[in-house]
Picture 1: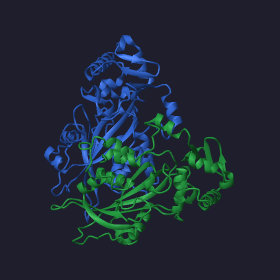
Picture 2: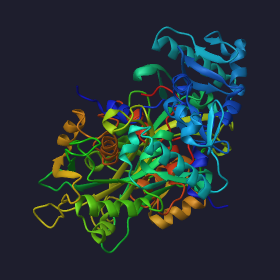
Picture 3: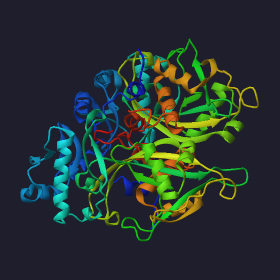
Picture 4: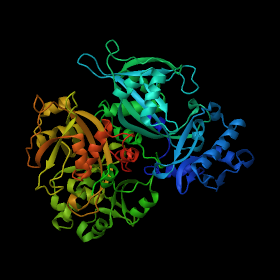
Amino acid sequence: MRYSNLELVDRVDAFPNAATHPIAFAERTADYARFTYLSHTIGYIIPLVRAALDDRALSGDWWELTPNTVSLKGDTVEERTANMAETTKRWREAKRFDILSGWRNEQYTVYAPQGKPCFHMERSATPLFGVLTYGSHMTVYVPASPTRPLRIWVPRRAAGKSTYPSMLDNTVAGGMGDGATPLATIIKEAGEEASLPAAYVAENVRAAGFVSYFYVRGAEAGGEAGLLQPEIEYVYDMAVGEPDAEGPVPVPCDGEVAEHMLLTVPEVREQLALGNFKPNCAAVMLDFFVRHGFLDAENEPDIVEIYTRLHRRLEFPTR
Amino acid sequence: MRYSNLELVDRVDAFPNAATHPIAFAERTADYARFTYLSHTIGYIIPLVRAALDDRALSGDWWELTPNTVSLKGDTVEERTANMAETTKRWREAKRFDILSGWRNEQYTVYAPQGKPCFHMERSATPLFGVLTYGSHMTVYVPASPTRPLRIWVPRRAAGKSTYPSMLDNTVAGGMGDGATPLATIIKEAGEEASLPAAYVAENVRAAGFVSYFYVRGAEAGGEAGLLQPEIEYVYDMAVGEPDAEGPVPVPCDGEVAEHMLLTVPEVREQLALGNFKPNCAAVMLDFFVRHGFLDAENEPDIVEIYTRLHRRLEFPTR
């Protein structure tokens, strides 16, 4: 199978949009509970997870449950965080969800309106609650010169990784934990994943917006299939020199990356079409191509749907 | 009054989004008719316009009217185009709508699903039907050098223009008529508005996506206030040299532009904050600032809402 650019978007933005597809949205969410804080929707709970919450012997009494809504008890960020932590700890100990076997010991923040923290929770448990998570992705590229076309540094994930093994990735990418900023995240990850010095990255990186989408996890993501993962990934570009001149060369250093390759845009597009990129990294590549003029209204008939879906306005409060 | 960046977005994207604000959307559209083609929504008809359509002596018998929907009779693009033309011609002759005093004699295309034309219609009448229209906007800028910061060529609209007189604009911008492409539109407008040679623009312009939003026209737009104007504006960047070196200088040539100024980013931001930019041109400037790293998650707390609303997924079929 070969994927069109729109089909690459379908892989990462797979949840129906209430504004453009109200019937599909209503059907899809008919048996979901809304995860609410005050009257705001902060996530969606699928029946598999709702069943665990209804099992009070397992999940404790930290939840307000109605037929269509779920909310976390607690009057403060600290209380809600503690109640969520106790629930996920019990689920992990009971081996209730496969996804928790990938426990990260990293805290992610879920937001209330006006960008205030609502609570913090274990990263690996976020897809169980369909809450919005954040990350940063950087594309390191060698700009076009009179003699050579633009090329992009593309890593291949290690074969031993539990998620998306051996797939192609963005040059640097990582999730944004509690207390980090998008820029601090990308600088830290650039050191860990590609051995790029923090001072060099801070000097040369350029913010370029974000992609946002509503991902539905498949088996290749690890854990239960069908879990919901709305995401905002802040995107950064960094132009560097030729590797045979003064340019830095990304070097794997934490065992997560097998190799870094320097690929032309046609080479990246071929790997995208073959489905070899991790789905959300494909989204970041498409966004790069639009911003840099490689994909436009003249050569991509689906550009409006592609680019609006990659900047999806999600229905949840954000940071 | 000073406008925040989010308030600048509010000025251009003023129609409630059904996905994120379902109650506001339902209230706003409660007395609107949907303009439909087969079962698809291709626009919204406000009561002011619906009243004219209900007046068959005025508007003829070219319309299928139900309490909540309006559709244009005709089995072919040509028939629907002719029926729309006859309706708008009668309204113009009867002076039924002020907005038609700005009659352009330019045809815009309204699309059916799969990017097929549904019909063509007079440009100035499109806001009466709330249909999606298209244009192209180009930001011509002098990139930063070791000694000088990035600067943007900003035109001031002529004082005598009927719409947005004396306001600031994008370097080049224009609506996309029937049969044109986004790139052809910007090349043509660059000659007409800024005296930039077509061959030079074709060589140096770079596509950079689009902005999309749902505008509600105020009095300053000309014609009736409250008319609906969802738009997709394809955006282009063109880097040029210093005007005191080899760089081209935009020169007004069609009387629409009073002058072109070369402004730094802080100067443009000040004019934005003062509300001196035409609303949709402010949107294009904000998009430029995000793509070029001047607005990011570290310095703009509202960046997620700003950038997703500027790439709004509209509920209408597109080209």
